[in-house]
Length: 309
Image 1 (cartoon, rainbow, N blue to C red):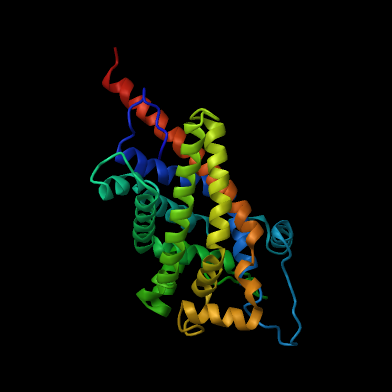
Image 2: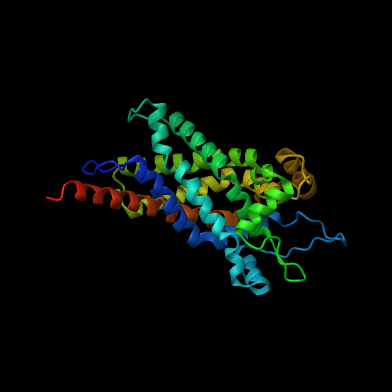
């Protein structure tokens, strides 16, 4: 990212790669209940009640969390956490950890990068990450969306069982369900998130508003989270609905979006906006602050090992 201190060594690509995955896992551990609430709100309205009346089980972020704790127990808030951590370790490592390397690739290793280069790098690493980590995302969404039936049974008994069941019942392509809308979503998310963070941080440092430390990282990360939520929410809702759908319910992501528009109206594309913002805002803050500190700490440790005296 921008704003490296001139007196410090530049973190290596390996430090950025593993640092991004680690920071993303830390952020997921802290914000996962908000993500689960977002998924439940996004799929609400997908099934029409038999009596024709609209019944809303979940209302608002904290109402959703409260309902889940009351009806399914506190552990339901972390349903799919294992798949979520698997996703972040493989996903964030690529989309965030390789972002600077991709910028250098497009500029032929020059330090001068414009917004077009930043956007290209964000789109590229976002698409690469989805292609690699899509099965973990599908399983995570399925776990977050599942509710116990009357007999107390769940759709999947565990993470491995989910991978096996999806591959057996829907084919290997079932693990890549929603891959294309997810590529679209994550290209948008990655570009908005990383480029906004880069620009805001660069402006703060350029005008000497803050030093390259926690307050600066916090401010830039918060702005990145808000902008990303506004831009990516419609695609995110379609992605969640399509990933969670049974085989054959929708012919594709576009068909899913059209069905949502006809059945629920345009506001359906912003279902779960508040938990999305709370989640993305807090996730960005924890992730970027952790990422910056991990890079700085590991790089300093490497310097001390190489120059002990």
